[in-house]
Length: 112
Image (cartoon, rainbow, N blue to C red; front, top):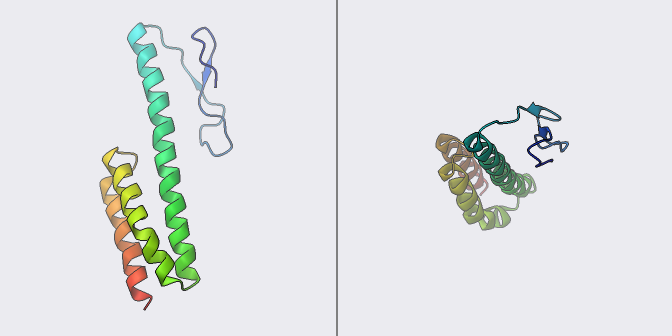
């Protein structure tokens, strides 16, 4: 990602990005440049929070598929922390975090 003000600024061009190669208009004012820097940093942080949430959810789903209730229960505190943090920082909607936690807890409890 280029950071020079005189060069075009591209969004994250990694393979996981929906915006691959999308060009962002170059801001003219100082405040607009600062807002662009802030939004790019915020976007990276939010993507990292979502990534962490997805990893924990996948680990729990794998444990449930294997029938390993103990492993799934061991990951619950980590799920709660990551989901609540993502919701608090508005990386995901708070209702989505609640829905994820509720559905996974229901599946864990059903595995008796």
